[in-house]
Structure formats: structure tokens, C-alpha cells
Image (tube, rainbow, N blue to C red; front, side, top):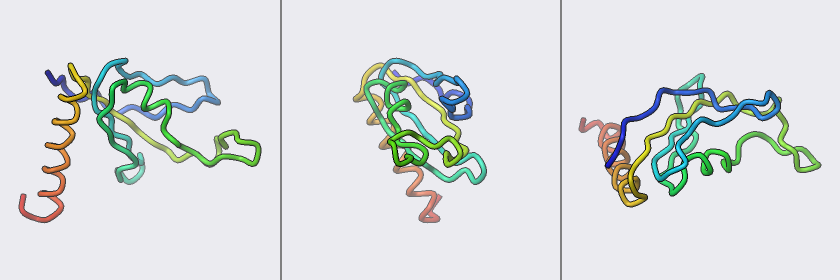
Length: 106
């Protein structure tokens, strides 16, 4: 069972004490650059909240910390599913539609 996509949300900045709002369940996530709408990352995972929290975002400083000034302005949205298999199937359909659109056949 696939639910609907959430609204686009600004990707949180830990330095400001912001948190990720995402399901702790299987699903799909999509992260994009806020200014251009260009895709940053996309995936079908077992735990959406954990996957978003683990994304390599920003620039690491010499001491291994993330530089908040170097972090791009990102937005994310999520879609919960019943199982990871449902998430993978939905993601494959989305990729197929995106490829069709990009090839000009849509």
C-alpha cells in the first residue's frame, strides 16, 4: 500500500536545532535543490527518517564536522509504504515515468 507524497519541506539544519519530519517506516524520499528544483537524491528505503538523516549533505571541515555555511538549500518530501518492496516498485515506476518524460515521449 502506497500513501501520498508529503508536502515539500526545507531540509533541516542541525546547527539551528531543526529536525527531520519523516515516517519511521518503509517508503520513498526525494531531496531537491530549493532554488532550481534539480534532484539531489532519491531512494526507496526501509526507514525513511533514518535514510534522510544519514544523507551526505554539506561540506566537511578539516575536523570532520559539517560546515553549516557550505550546506546547500535543500527541500525534501516523503511517501510512506507498507513494505520496502512496495517502495521499490513505486520508485521504479517513478523512474520509468521520469525517463519517458526526459526522452520527450510523454
